[in-house]
Length: 149
Length: 143
Image (cartoon, rainbow over all chains, first blue to last red; front, side):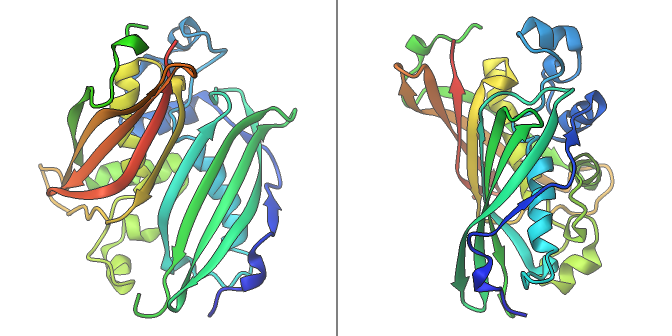
């Protein structure tokens, strides 16, 4: 299967908002071995000026990868998920994600570049609240390995 | 906050730590993140796609490495941007009573922007002396 070169410029949107729950923030924090009290204790988060538990700096990947999945699972994309390797990742936070947020994401395919028999695909997820407040921009580069790569 | 931007200079060390990774850590990260790619928990599948065996999620390593920065600055929301390239997989062996991989993390101040009130922390993240993350950089806001 080959990567569809016309993917560049496409966009996808999550079908429903991602609700950031306290237990999700706590579970993700434990999973990345974070120990800051602001991830676990509401009073500690409020002492830092936040409304509720603060998500770790890479938490937005949950929403970004759900958006990426819309592209990867698009039958028209030609992407074989088992051959996908994460090559680059960047997060830009417009504000911290906190428990109680309702997040939506729009995924943009910013680049598709052939590499041998495979391709490097750059995607950008613009994550905002349902009210339209910008929260984070994530940029991912995934390498879809060709045969023998 | 105890860190003053005036005390920071390029090259200032923020510390180092050792990250011991087990298979259980990868299962926990898969559950918390929703990334259930079998290359992170199924040796047979990983070998079928020409990997040496189960490897850590790149995002697990990236997410755990930045804890050095958040613990140093004391507020996770101070990290305004964070990026890296993933250059080498981290195989995690299936062993009892010992970590399946040991990754070393250290950080230094790479740049200071006094006008913006930010500093860039450059992380060095290695497995057996070889970098697994390249250009791992976090920009933090100092108030």
